[in-house]
Image 1 (cartoon, one colour):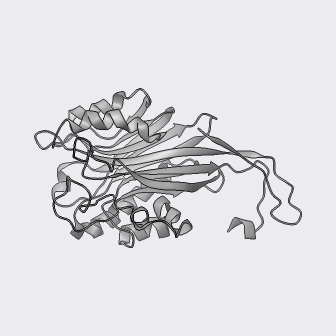
Image 2: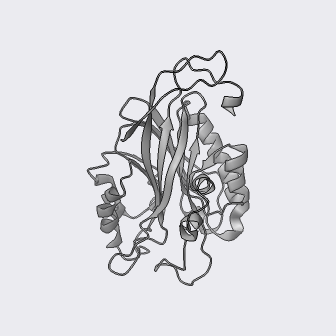
Length: 302
């Protein structure tokens, strides 16, 4: 992990100068690998190629969706990621397909199924996975991974699932900064996106990065992880959207997360084809711990 030295500043009259603290940089990846269970698995040779290339992203923590087929167990044996948490492995399609991979120890984990589903998503027990990761200096980050209901007509179900998800997050969080990763099957401006960014108070890492960098080229601004115009695995040329997200949440007492950069990953072809029907999303983040004994002024806390 890279370390950047940050020095305290005086935030208001009567405040003491805080001691210097270190910002901890994290690289986080979310990836729907399209690992449907055989006989529905398309081009099984993709899975070992994903496993071979995932470390090259430089990610420290990875959230995986659609790891249904037994062949996806290859992702659980990548030497760079010796720590993992699995979702449910039961069901006709091989469970919920959720997985967390981490360079650092996972000290607690839990899984819960959604109470609601729609259409063929009911064949698999989609749910939400939590992993508490202990970073090298001993602090922890709460990581949540999920995969919301698919299909454009199911936004009401996704909103209900987002509400269930937030209840699970509230129960499991211990005050550590949190990351929520996954395939949300919804676009910015939808009801479920508005719930997570509004009522739940989470921050869309890519959306925030775009706001901070208005001069980004259109492709970088769009961040389309579901992209028929570019992805060789999706029929048709229309309907490019951003379905895959990295959300950030600040505890208020244990520090704040800052987005440094976001980009698509696994958006290149291998042997003429892409490795999934989704592109992955990679975010570089900085975690600024709260300074011991530090008190913000009212203006500084906004």
